[in-house]
Amino acid sequence: MRLFQSLAVIVILFSSITCAFALGAGDSAVVNWKGSYYNATILKQNAANSFIRYTGYDSSWDEWVTPKRMRIQVLWKGKWYDARALDVSGSRVFITYKGYGSEWDEWVKLDRIRSR
Image 1 (cartoon, one colour):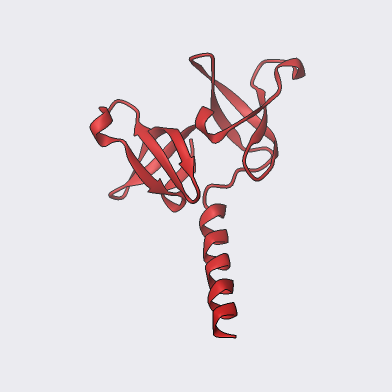
Image 2: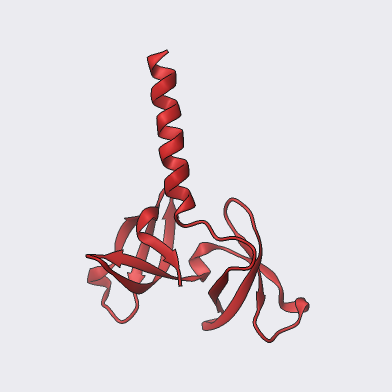
């Protein structure tokens, strides 16, 4: 019984961390398309990807995008910094900060990330 309770607590904690980065229909995003960034609106969201519409473009450009193609912000010492996701592994994201060298790249937990 104690093992079951421990597992339940872990699931609840993981769910709350994941929700900190969750995006939903109607949220704004900035998305990379072939090396340039464009404003977009999220139309649908599944567990891993977002179905987006680029602002000012018709529905023929709608597409599913991964978090790696979205601009994000990362909390570091009480301030939000623009960043880009390079890799995702479980509840952590490997990011690079906009305007900073690769020596600042780091793995961060989802509770330090928000959509830009």
